[in-house]
Length: 102
Image 1 (cartoon, rainbow, N blue to C red):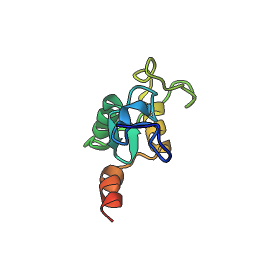
Image 2 (cartoon, rainbow, N blue to C red):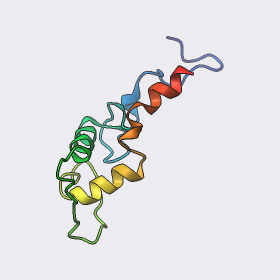
Image 3 (cartoon, rainbow, N blue to C red):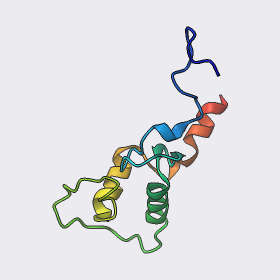
Image 4 (cartoon, rainbow, N blue to C red):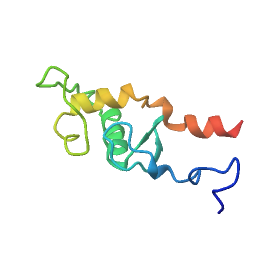
């Protein structure tokens, strides 16, 4: 590929892994549930929204936890809140596909 000419892409369009996970900052793996995320955050969100008992998470630090790759497993409440704040939703699972078809 030639990336030097006018109008050339800065990076390959299909290389989503260069964009960090919007939740924790880890290397992303794709567009999941409406946001660019890593496999860990995708799985966490999938498990959280499929909880049959509709369990609510509570934060021990008043909802002020920093979610990073190193700390993402420390507080489920803040991680779930961050997932929602970056646009993840149960309905967002297929938004990119629908958006690119038209």
